Image (cartoon, rainbow, N blue to C red; front, side, top):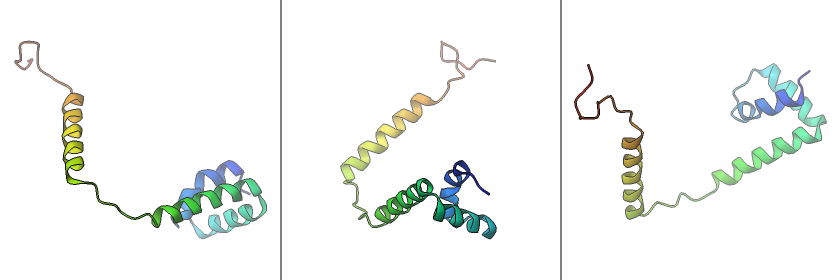
Length: 91
């Protein structure tokens, strides 16, 4: 029998239909009896349903361009440098 912890850890896989049939049956049995796991399951499924119905509002082009510039700058900052302090590569 699965524990609540195991059920909660497997909820995403359950929702994604990425589990073996015998595990699905055991999870459904547990969720049917355990109000706490049922509440977690209901919350997750409702969140997913609401998310799927959200309109895909396009990002304004000027905002998109600024975001890309910021991301490129952040990427450049994060790159480790293998150069010495005078700008020549170390050997």
